[in-house]
Length: 311
Ligand code: VAH
Image (cartoon, rainbow, N blue to C red; front, side, top):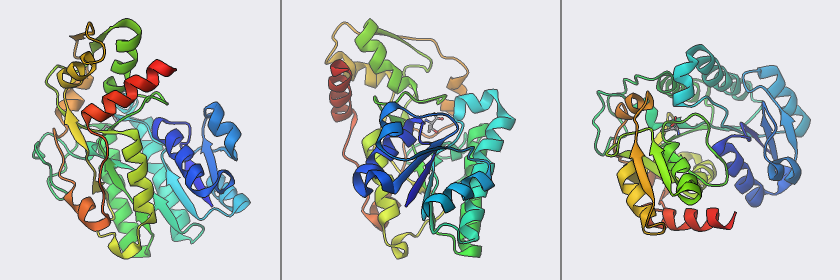
């Protein structure tokens, strides 16, 4: 039985939907601090859980005999800069609660997302390697790099089967993201179709590692299904699919909406984006458990435009 913490979020929503498709609706308990979308609420069990409350999580684990937890509850980079203490509390205490529940053998396996945000201004920007300098300059990045070291510690010391991926910016159309720096790449599609124009909060040549939601969800489930012996990295696999700048995604959108106009008005999120790599080397994931992305900028743009126009 699987419990998803943070099932109302951008990734949590689509991950829950895919897990229910793969394992069956009643095998996947969705939970969040707030209710989820209609489909999540009606297609299988749902529980309101504060992911930082270990006792509350344990109660649901015992109620449904949960064996695996996917912890997607977190506060993302832009919001975390506005509420540092709240972000640290949510991002760290939810992870430590779930790690302890695994150490105490209440659950057998954990998925916890890390992020390219673990890298900072001193990290090599191009083709960033799996092992390199990690000096994050954002609250979110500090929580993710700390989380990575805790995951490694609990695996080495207590044998906890924790698995993790350093997600790039994730692009989706079904669920709006909340509070991320890469969220411009989601919003731009909706604004291009609705208004034929978009004012971007990052500068035009800000190239960032990105991935279409379907690739991120499939990578997550593929990692959790892999045999333990092939998992060589327990703090967070680099994961990549593409990199693009606002200028590049705008010109791709123009192939479908020729009179689309983009303007640039960088705000505080520019500093966050500038601290992150431009591209990632994910050869370890491709080697250890056959990771392979399916969507690049062209194929992703084609799908998203088509799907939003159907809404
Ligand atoms: C954010 N989407 O923008 C998240 C992610 C690498 C970006 O961490 O905060």
